[in-house]
Length: 508
Image (cartoon, rainbow, N blue to C red; front, side, top):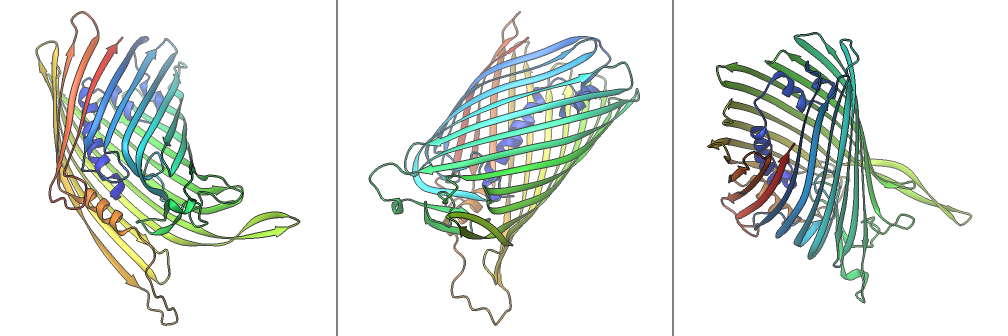
């Protein structure tokens, strides 16, 4: 697992488990809620709707973090989602907005550190703000035949800014479009979806004030914290490239997904995604990063009396390469034109993960889920011949979560997650006597070691929340806390981190 993802991954597992436990007891129809195929939501009943809106506030603090995370993080936002069944049509949609304020932040200038194989880091602690907008919708047409078409669309926009030198403003957009088709064979169903995704993000950096540009440095990460460390407007960082006033990244993905369900007992799907990403624009394409990804999932569920039992098995595999282009600038008639002469592979990665889960639900609202998650990654850096750095890591997490009704109005939600990992590093030099190298490639060793510690530390996460629903009115209030303690910490600013939140929800 990438060091930049480890802490968020453990929290994500708890949040995902909590989301599952808050749902109604599973049925064959609910299987398709997790599918990319919206046509699977078409059911036998003619009409009906469900909708929910929430307001929330959240505070995160503590020292168990990477340097790209905030010392203190305030978040607030609103979200709404709805699903409506008409006589001939099914409509789904959701909207969300989140505002975040972080203190003492530096490191990655990207909105989602670690999402791309390249990164740009700055080293002046300061406050950052981020706004996230989400909107999605879909429809499926009940055309009176066994063939049911559908389509979904999703858009996300993020604005990210730091108002202290080295200042930067980052904008990100995500678009996903998924047309689908489903064949309803009665007891069984089979579906297929085409997946199109596009992400784009760019960083605009600047420095305001009397200080010289050489006073502020940045680091262009080409994988595993190997890269270029220069003044932020240096030619090796690409933040202030002549002809390109920003650091742009884009990625386009095409994919296909197949789904199958058998009654209310069995559901399975698989998908394959092909992606091609680029760093640069206007002919200045500094990097390319193609990737291939495969995911699959199987869920088996059955009912015994008032109890429902579900077993889940998921798997993920991804391979990626980062290629750095060699660009020559040719000037003719006062016009400079970039030309790509070739490319070198500077980084590659392969990652795989698997998850086994069990859920027990009762009609009275009680639910219990246990999950075992494991991942394995291999990263190879070849930024400077003849050196290469091979890194491998394995992580294992176990979690148990429960929803416990306390009477008619109160619900207690509790969870625990524990796990950690280990990595091995091997630096080798290719045997080529004709190549003489006097120094290793540039690397942020301190950052890399700290991120590896955060990634691999054995930790214990405990979450606790309490929800109250008003009588005779579909309004509820919820407050909770997630606390993490890591063992054997020596490099990170601390061994603990907590997240507290309050939430108001309305179902209608």
